[in-house]
Amino acid sequence: MSGIKTLGQFIIEKQADFSYAKGELSRLLRDIGIAAKIVNREVNKAGLVDILGDAGTVNIQGEGQKKLDIFANTQFISALTSGGECCIVATEEEDDFVPIDSPVSKNAKYIVCIDPLDGSSNIDVNVGVGTIFSILRRKSTEGIATIEDVLQKGTEQVAAGYIIYGSSTMLVYTTGKGVNGFTLDPSIGEFCLSHPDMKVPADGCIYSINEGNYVHFPEGVKKYIKYVQVHDATTNRPYTSRYIGSMVGDIHRNLIKGGIYIYPTTASSPNGKLRLLYECNPMAFILEQAGGVASDGFNRILDIQPIELHQRSSIFIGSEKMVRMAEEMMRKYTLKESDKLTNINGTELDPAV
Ligand code: P6P
Image (cartoon, rainbow, N blue to C red):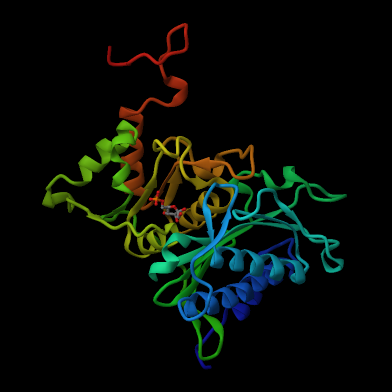
């Protein structure tokens, strides 16, 4: 075991970084790690057991749930309930937030917002999927925690992370003191520090976006796509397009190699597709801590005030220079909703006229 540092050892070692935590946050991160190992076991044997396929149910997002979606959701809620440090779980797979009311959770201070299995449409075809989590401290000091404790800006997060169930299983997280990655060693059943102090390259040559939605993209996104496709060796263009349909997979690759992931507004997602509380905010916290940036094309993701549990947002996230270029095009070519010109009947006027 010489030279190996497990997630548990690392968390305890860094516990001193938290002036207010007396081990609760450490235990909470441990609970998430335990659930991740259980989910990993099922993801890795999907196909061998009856855990693939549709569950025959639909979540509040209107998305068909996979059996593994429900399995992962159950495992994380169970681990957070028995761990005793969490008072509310807000999960993609539940219509409303889940109050944790167990004898051990009486004084729980933390709220966990989670996408238990992101990219689950890829499960049946063996493409990487992931879990994304965000940890907040409750603001209320007495009584039961409420929705107001959940609807906090991303700047209020005390920790965030993701697990990627890919060619290897990794847990990547931040508590606001940098980003560290841990790879699961199945032979000892431990996440071991493998990517200390992760930093996203300031620039890159990979862009991740579903170009099938091109016709419905904002004009600024269309201009950015055309920009990255221009042949110009001096700026390493054309860039490479990489899009696997799992936000965790695309962002993890871009975090390591440099790149930008964009999910803008589309015809089917007029407010963006990704959910603010348990996808955009945690990923934005991680990328900012790694030296990157994340916005909705105009505003910093972490500054957005959530007003509902499953609120969606556009997201432009990754290498700083790439995101800033895309934002510049959004400002130049896409009118913000508030800037839209409308006549007295409220119908939109063409600004070019
Ligand atoms: P589309 C998965 O459903 C997800 O939330 C992200 O993980 C992924 O990047 C995106 O949606 C894929 O959406 O519309 O391109 O299939």
